[in-house]
Image (cartoon, rainbow, N blue to C red):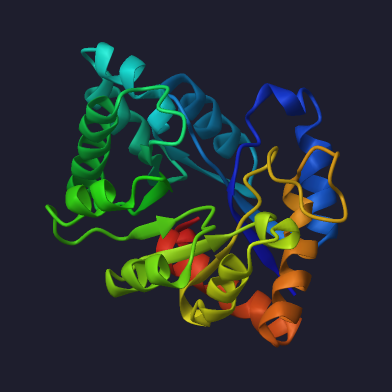
Length: 258
């Protein structure tokens, strides 16, 4: 039984020199492959370097919406984003999107950065990893101004109405540890309703550690308890869930290419 962590941040300093240990622990839990997601251009370079040196790791390149102002202030940002996206074992653009919950970068800055990411992704034929928080109307306005986008809405934690909008556009849904500790009935109902052929598993490690491991640093190995929780929630066999979500990740991110 194999799982893929489709969204973590193994390059973050929080893991220090424990990256090899973290990968070993993940493999012991059935998490044989993972995607380390970039949140700034420098961070994306680190993720790509990790993927180059670790056969279980792939990477993405992108600038989190919180980083939009810094991204736009760099006159070479788009060129650098494209360069990073063409490095070996980089399989997607992101994470990118809109986050109006904190607005560390202004709304218009986030939108401009999002558009640049989508344009590079479409130019290179890469899927996108989207982060959307309290910004759905604006996100769909931007998204729908393009055609042919493939990707995933990561860290899905909203209701069935938004789920239907995501699915109607052909995107995948990334579920993580939030579902193991949320008290929001609507979030759980939406998690039950995600079609199996559109479901991806993720941790967002080192964040969002699932129950019953709250208080610990989240790691890719925690995909297993997340999957166990979701299998019970959705009334599915764990092996069936593992097989389907692994196939979905391989398909979206083209992981068979190595």
